[in-house]
Image 1 (cartoon, rainbow, N blue to C red):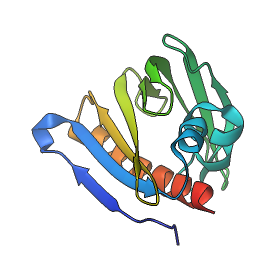
Image 2 (image 1 turned 45 degrees about the horizontal axis):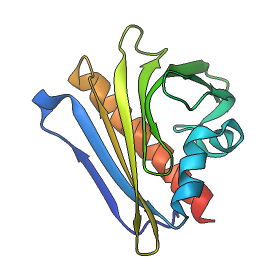
Image 3 (image 1 turned 180 degrees about the vertical axis):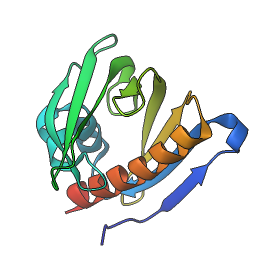
Image 4 (image 1 turned 90 degrees about the horizontal axis):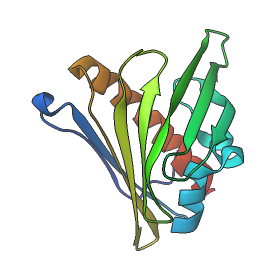
Amino acid sequence: MPSVMDTRDVVAAPEDLRLELTRVIKAPRARVFDAWTRPEMIRQWFGADGRTAAEVSTDATVGGAYSIAMESCEGKGASKATGRYTKVNPYDLLQFTWEGSWVPGEESLVTIHLRDVDGGTEIKLIHDRFNTKESRDGHNQGWIGILDSLVTTLSA
C-alpha cells in the first residue's frame, strides 16, 4: 500500500476539460522534481495499468523535448507520450505539453506544482486542454496509477 498522507482525486466540472490531482510524498522536493526530469528515475516509477517506461529521454529545459515509451508487461502493445517543456522552475514547477500516441492529434498541457509540507512534498498535477471529456477521464485514471507508483517508489 502506498504511503500516502493526503489524497484528493478531483475532476473539475465536465465542461472544463481539466483534471487536478494532489498527493503528498514522504520525500524532499528536490528528489520529487528529479523523479519527473531524470530518465533513469522516470523508468523506475512511470507507468500505470501494467505498463512500464521502457525508453525515456528528457531535456528538461524550456523548449526541450521529452519522450516516454511505455510497454505492457502482458505484451499488449506499446504507447508513447511526447511533448515539450514550456516552464521549468527547478524544485517548484514543471510544465509540459502532452501528446499520447493513443489520442493522436490531441496536445494537452500538464503542470506539476511542488511545495514543502509537513512530512514531505505536495505534488499538484493539473492536466488540461483535452479535446473530450472521455479523454480527460481516461487520463485521470492513468495519472492516478502513475502518481500512486511515484508515491510508492519515492516513499520507500
